[in-house]
Image (tube, rainbow, N blue to C red; front, side):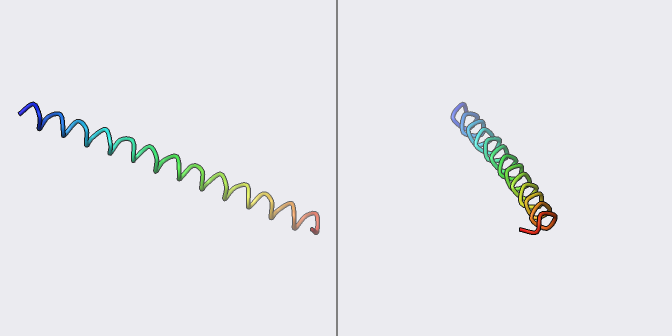
Length: 48
């Protein structure tokens, strides 16, 4: 029984870290998307 509880805890820790990774990736994608948009605005405004 203890072994089962330990495995469930392990799995939930893995899921939690995976969820955090997804959140981090989403933030990175959003920020890179934002910087790309800013670059395009500057390029259009500056006529690059």
